[in-house]
Amino acid sequence: MLLLTKAVFAIMLGFLSSAVLGLFLVPALKKLRVGQKISIFVGESHRRKEGTPTMGGLIFIIPTVLVTLALLITDKVSYTSNLGIVLLVFIGYGCIGFLDDFLSIRKGDNEGLTVYQKLIMQVLIAIGFFYIYMRSGGQTSWVVGTLHIDLELGWLYGLAILFVLVGASNAVNLTDGLDGLAGGLSAIALIAYSLISLTVGFEEIGIFSLILVGSIVGFLIYNTHPAKIFMGDTGSLALGAAMGAIAILTHRELTLLVVAGIFIIETLSVIIQTVWVQVFKRKIFLMTPIHHHFEKLGWEETDIVKLFWVMGLLLSMAGIIFGVWL
Image (tube, rainbow, N blue to C red):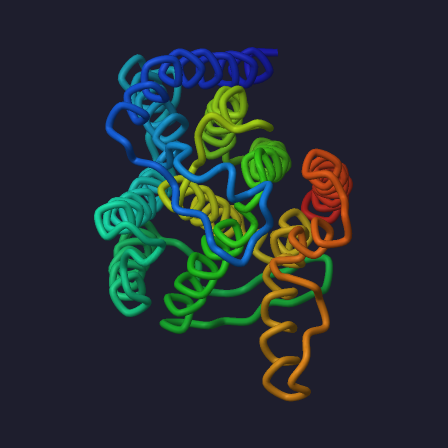
């Protein structure tokens, strides 16, 4: 009963703090003219969104970190190395995204950090992750009980950490193309991982995940159609990396393929399109990521978002079953 109360309290604190912060941050970012530049390849409906403030990820990053620290200081949540790692990754990738957004705005286009600059920063965070993880006695074997897999990776586990963090963060980043899409899907996926974390004995990670869920829902007040603010790379990189870190620390990496299935489909659509164009000199989708394909077919933006949310919810439920029960 106490754990259930903690869970509800975590969501409530995250939601209230982000909803209140948004009241001040949205107009402040408008005044600072940190508007999003829209690609020339998207439709007219997206062109009308140009100038909408970006860096909105701050609305859920700042409250999540502050609420987590407050609960740690008041001994409502116990500090563990795992929680320290999640905070490191969440804040670190948020900073990478913030710098990328800042440079994009300063240059007046969508080109912020270079690929190599991002990769170097991501490698440094992965090294910090691996160092703290090993110092705290973390296992370096890949275990999937359902499939009877127990593979010792040794130092290669560090590369696995980097791969998951980079893959998850970029998957969320690619999905962030419609109002409320990436935020809603992230909240759904994190609810699944919070339940998995609480069930398999990672209470502190579960509570952090629920705080983040509440903060994202507060952010969606301003991000659902018509969006008053975009999360930007600040938010998308932080969310994806946090999901990846939680999957690794709870030893449910394979479950991420199910829970984050929509993000993976979005990413695969881009890869397939790129390869198809290179090999056959023509497109297989009208536009990628795949949510833009549905737009080109004439679907309403809100209908696409609702469909993807429902699919994400079904996959998250399947992920819980796979990650806990099977």
